[in-house]
Length: 325
Length: 292
Image 1 (tube, rainbow over the protein chains, first blue to last red):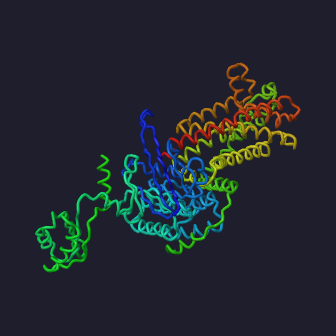
Image 2: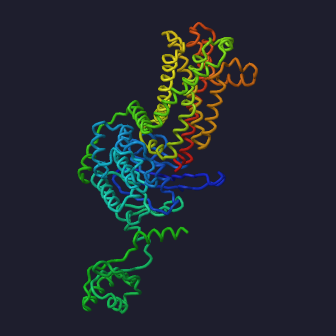
Image 3: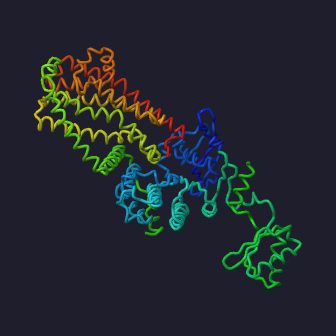
């Protein structure tokens, strides 16, 4: 599989207040993102995610190291890079549009800049406006749109060019729940079915966990871990544990588990819609996985599932960034 | 339209041909559309065009024709002021429009969205200036039409004078736009300086003698010397000689104006382009292509 995005020791400094201090925004980042991969950049504010994305889309010139997008150097072949990317900066909250143009005219304008043939542009604009439920407002000036509507115009603009690589900075910010779900599904489909490479940043850990093939966790400009969400969980887990899902009395289940030698301690008890989930630290995972359903069954509790408990991405993120501190 | 239908539209790779002309026309088209969105502003601007010409008509009644004649510009103050008033809008457009537009794009975050498309940024910057040029053209045509046909100002519009006027006018645009590029490059980086450019344009307009003959500055040699540093001074002098006095290319003063403007253009255009490129690369280095 080919590499879509590759960075090597990529570094960017910015001047701090007064211009005397030098702040490292991106610190020797080396990444390799495959074609067709859904790649997430996760990190706290100021971690360097946006700067990294801006370097990849040629908006910011790096100070050290190299970055290649679709095989082109972001500094030497910037124009070629721009032919292969779609970029969205969600944090602008819909500001980065021409407010005195209609939604349709905004899209038409960008289609021309992207050299998209007129008839193709027209078909795509109509389709995207309809998909993002903007067709009825397509000819209204953007200045009269809500933030969510502006965000949808920006998403449509990013997708319009049919670029093989999409660099998306907070693409679901400002969208309502339905809009965010639909957008996530569309991005997933673009990645899975049209083999587009998507590099995206988010603060929404749930979103990253659900969408990404791999995630790079960034902190203070550095990439501190890169892997699949599952592997990141495995790497960062600090104890052996199991997660039991069952129907029946939670108190009874806790009492049973506390009585088992293999169980060290109960970590959490959570009620879900029609069942309960108990996480417990154990001395031996395999023994716990076979023993617990049997004991539950003998005590009239119905086990729905039992599996090795891995930290969720939120715990992974906190664990990694805490280690950095 | 559901997700699958949208996906279908993206399954076919279309052939794209890069056309800088199409990109430029898209920028100009968008700028004009945005301008037309400010309807009341447009109407007010057109009305002010007519009002200003009428005002100079009445001012002309108060000016002693013999004093104007002693300065070598004929006896009609209306004709004299008309050439200055009609072209001074272009001076403002050349010097201030681009830097102002770029600042606007940076603050709105749209400069970044343009910069990630395959357009050459110089094409985009050229397109940004189009709006100012078009408004100034409307103003120029309006002022001449009202002045000449409405109020009877006598200007020489022969094929030869028009050719010379256009030559001087184009040189004026090139040299002043080059100064505008320098201003835009600097303002792009420092994000301030718009008022300075406005002051520069106002001083330039004043020193070039838009509303009075430069001969009056003889009493103030330092100011007169300063006025000679601006290309617009030569352009206005040449355009007036051609349109008011009917001077030909053989007129030494017109020829001098053309040569001086040519030298200004040759010197300033590379400087302007370099400063603009420097400014744009500098904001990419500093990560300040937007400032919301």
